[in-house]
Length: 266
Ligand code: ARG
Image 1: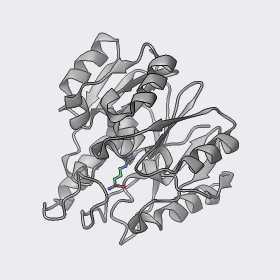
Image 2: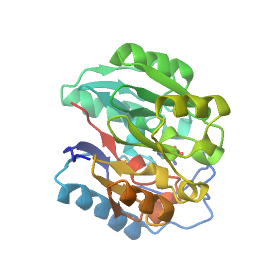
Image 3: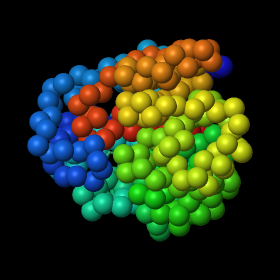
Image 4: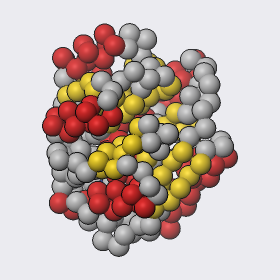
C-alpha cells in the first residue's frame, strides 16, 4: 500500500440538475437541492486536497447538468489525452469542452472516432486498460484507445443497466489490484477478470447498490460512499484507509466520487 499523489480535474456542479433520463438512477420528479450538491462536492474536493492531491478545475457550462461528472470528459495516460464522444445527445457538447481544456494546457489530444465516455469506461491498472462496453462506450473506442495509448485494452461486457459505466462496477486499488462487483459483468468477462486478477477484492450486490464501486483510491486512501459498509470493512482488512464521502445529491444523477474525478496521469 503506497499513497501516490494524484492530479485530478473536476467540474463544479453549478448547473447540476436531473432533467433527462439516461440511466436508471435518474428521476426528474425527485428534486435536487443545489446548495447541498455544491457543499457535498466541495467536501470531496477538500478531501483530495487534504490528502496532498492536486485538483484543477474546468468551468461548468450552463445547460450541461452532467458536466460535474468529469470522469466522462476524457482519458489521460502518459500525458496523452483521448477525447470523449458521448452516446447521448444531451451530453454531446461536454466532449469538445473537456478536449479544449486539455488542448489549452498543451496536452496532445486525440479526437475520438467512436463513442467513448472517458474514464467512465476506461480504467487504468499497471499493465492494462480495462474498458467497459454494453451501454455507453463502443468497442471501436476500445481499439482506438489501445492504438493511441499503446497499452493492452481488455474489453469487458457490462450487463446490468444500473451499472452502465465500468466505473460503477469496478475500481483500481493500486497497480494491478482491483475491486469489482462480478454481477455487473457477462459470464465471459467475469472469467477474464478472474484470470487476470485472481486476488481481486470482490464487492457484494449491496456494495454496488450503494455505488461503492465508484470509489477512488490513491494507493492507500480510498474515497468511498458511507453506505458501502461491507466494502469499507474489506478495505480495512486489506490495509487500506477508507474515507467516507457522501454525495447523495449527485447520486440522483447516477454518479458518485469517481464520476466527479478525472485523473490526469503524467
Ligand atoms: N447522468 C450521467 C450519465 O448518465 C452520470 C454519469 C456518471 N459518470 C460516471 N463516470 N459513471 O451519463
